[in-house]
Image (cartoon, rainbow, N blue to C red; front, top):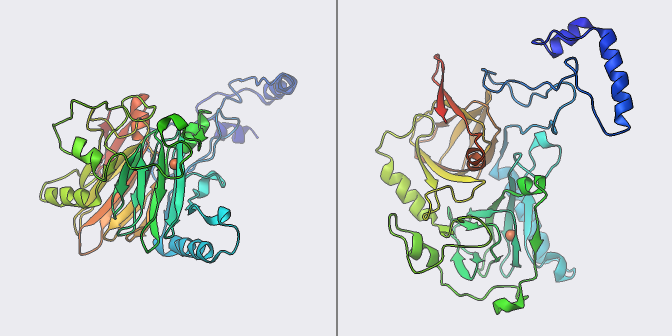
Length: 406
Ligand SMILES: [Fe+2]
């Protein structure tokens, strides 16, 4: 018994068993008033993050803890596994003889992190849905507090309207819907389209400030419309903001409700690829390869205050060094094949595969293919930086740990 106590809290001298029993009695009494009495014997146990915890992940603190102790686990969702469900729901919807209300809008699957006990989230802050839109499908205009984005997997087809701007979607595009912007989606092409929706929804739920509204005010001139009328043609925000170092002075940069929101809402897959390939001759980052961040052109900050979006290119044979961050990161493979080692586990990936790296576990990427690999990432590093909790470390094979940030 004493040994067990010592194991629980090795750094603390601990109280005698008698003292512990007495404290538990007090705690039983205090529970009537929704109070918990903390002593040295039953203090919440938290692991020290910045000691070298090797590959350990998902470790739960023992005893009572201050917050829910479910932990994000590294996980990999293979295209060949998840795409079959998209095809199946798309087919059911196409052939549905039920009222169109059930199937008219859109179909999607949500990814569940196996460490989070069925919650609709892939990390503690990020929700991911993968949507398939049949020809003619429409997701009616709506607005919500979570920031959201879509990363397009299909070659073409489909659109998103954001605040009256029509964005035609093609593979590798990133389309943003910042907090509080009216948006609708649809597919007026002849083939189904698939994209990945990423949202900071779990964070908004945690803060008790997740809300959605489907009732577009009539004052906007298009109240209750299912689809916004096009006010700005495809490419509008790119014309305004798509060139570095030049910003339009005659428009308001406000979009939706956020503080300094990102008014460039459409990043084109072709341009992302072109940018990365244009930089592939550079040395790059030893922990990331050739990497770029998607930024708000007005402020130079991450596109959302909560989420960072990035893309990186790994050259054939390239192996990055190990890195870990206080942030959690979600990856989508756009081109190529390779592997990512996360907390000592190796995940082999191919195009359209998705994987998640939990907070503060060692990971490295390896391009095992013959061609360049391109992967996109979404992480809550932006949030952690904003609240002063972003830290990152690197590790060289065989040598020590180095501080990379702050
Ligand atoms: Fe939405």
